[in-house]
Image (tube, rainbow, N blue to C red; front, side, top):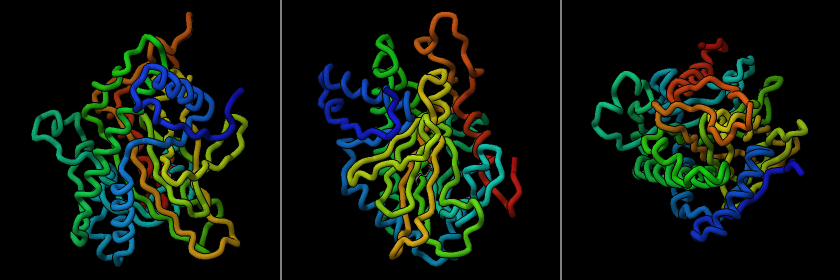
Length: 337
Ligand SMILES: O=C(O)CCC(=O)C(=O)O
Ligand SMILES: [Fe+2]
């Protein structure tokens, strides 16, 4: 039976380290990625204290006056760093479809503590290791964000190991390790204000889109107006909110790697219901995991049945990401691509 809802999967048995425990988790993850492309994970080993610290500093940042947030403004359209205000981006643009700007503001960082080696600065590295921009006002912010980025990188590596186990018996658990050891991921905090008026026709907190990379790890809060996923029957279903859980979904690159055996699912963030009481402002912490820029993503041999052909031409992780970024930003409503 195909899962039509997002399952909740306890990673405890994987981290417990026994072969049975790992196989049990890998099996559940395989089904989730095949059927709906989303799962909620619990027992993920990320300290609650770190999540709470990042949340608190994120609130402080978004509460700053606009002029102060603008001190950490996004430097260039192809550099996803720093602050973007409400409606400056539309995720639906990345799907080649015109849509009003998303009702969210964001703050983004890329890799921190980048080594002073040519790999990170040569032409091919493009904007992937661009310097971060930080808000000058908030002590502890840079430290907390860098710690969170590192913790998410570690969790993503564990998830990629589970993916390797889930995909094929013949793939070693560490198959992806050397493809993500210089990952070009992005961590982005989001605040969706609770707007009661001025919302345009079709304007959402985040328009329907798929994510680009290998996987995404989201820490949502419980506000009304949350994340929805389009299931195999074409219905929008709510992602369950689990207090200490993370939402994980796979992105387009993982779908290509598996020749569509796993799906990068359309999702969106809806507005709160019109009669929602109180302030239903929503905050989320989103980590977009993206393999090393020079990794060629091409169909895994174990995902090809006899006589089947790869559906996608091989693409480098860096080129794939760059092609998506530029489309996502809007300036005065026109598409920059
Ligand atoms: O805020 C969320 O829960 C998810 C947002 C999202 O899907 C994205 O930014 O790609
Ligand atoms: Fe997304």
